[in-house]
Length: 601
Image (cartoon, rainbow, N blue to C red):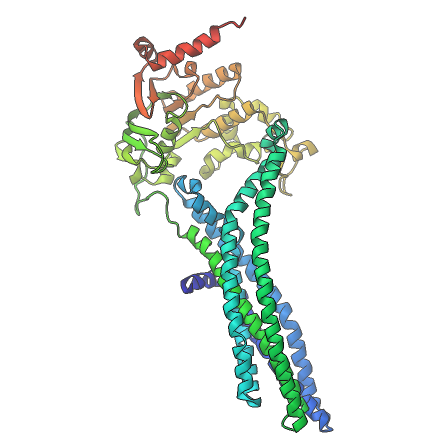
């Protein structure tokens, strides 16, 4: 906890040094204000009772009152400023770490995703909670020390009684804090599930099926069930807090009442002045308030540190794939890429997806990979892009294991078109240009890529041309110079049009070393597919390419066709050679061809 507290305070100090310093000074002033007010009040009362006019004490009391009145506003301003800057810094560090993950494995780990969920919702605010509560502890401790000294002047046992009355509160509140933090961690998974169901209910991509299948009620019920589970957990902790804190409040009131009776009795016997009684009342109230605040701040800081642990768990997760301290740059691909005895599975308790695959992608040639669903074709793509590492074996880039290369540099030499390519809620230009963000392609390169994909006329014909947002759910920022209201509201593309945009995105980079086409025409009609593959053939010419497709008529012109079956390379060769062999490829090709030739009767 100490290390975690140091990290939280250090993060806040780096993010908002001026605000944190000012917050500390104002907190100290806030602790001294009530003490000065109590003593000045005693002086004023005693002077008035003695028949004098306490001008000086009254003036100082007014000054102390002004300071005391201003302190909460200054604290609120400094707390808010510290919170904004600290959350910004914590969020930035969190997502910077997530963005540095080399592969995909963390995003498929439920435990990591639970940490990430709590870190995003509560963990980024934890440092300012620790600062706020920590300074509250300082403020409370100073007030307690000052008023405890005052109570010692009136009687040592009074101070001891007030301080000892806080011990049960500290113990009980810390126990409640642990329960609250544990509850937040428990409901994290339920919150993720609730967000999943609620997103399905409002997401435009799922709206069609949800309404057609009448699945809204089912998803709504699932969402409500998760919300009720979260509410049940919160209510359970709330009830316990109500009981415990109610009992503590009663005990505190009894202590205060007893001390007040003692002070009144002292006045009757002449042992105390009227000002002493006022001072005792103020001191007891201030000490109890400070103790209560100190306990609350300790508990809040403790809970904040527990939640901050989820943030540190993500930030300290380290790389999901090993990267050398001095990785070599990926060289220009000259001979080819080799998968040598590659074995892979997604987890130790899951079956092997690839079983000793040996495969070479010769430089400057097109290699097609075909096979049934689940054969391991998409897994090959992930290994080539180093989104995962083989469990056994190696992927070699011109003879060099890609684990020795800089992943960013390697991926800069690879471009891919996926069948499940993302439809970004950005402009048409940005949807293509995002395929080569480091070089920030200009309009000319974007239009050239769009022409290669056969989508230039579609994008240029939009209301604002390439500046038209390809979304109906987000408005552009205020600086968007819309040509019309229709352009401002954005448009949606058809599945085939989006597929062409994805192809343009994949080829916008100038001559990548490796071009991966994973079902690039899955959403296209026959005419569009023919046109797109005519264009892709021109793009692939003289370029190292990997083509994956279930449509075997598309792959027949590849230099080498590889058939993957049960995680192994079952066949390889040219189209004519494989057809002559009469194996799996020939069987699948004949099935597809027969399907086109058959006439339904």
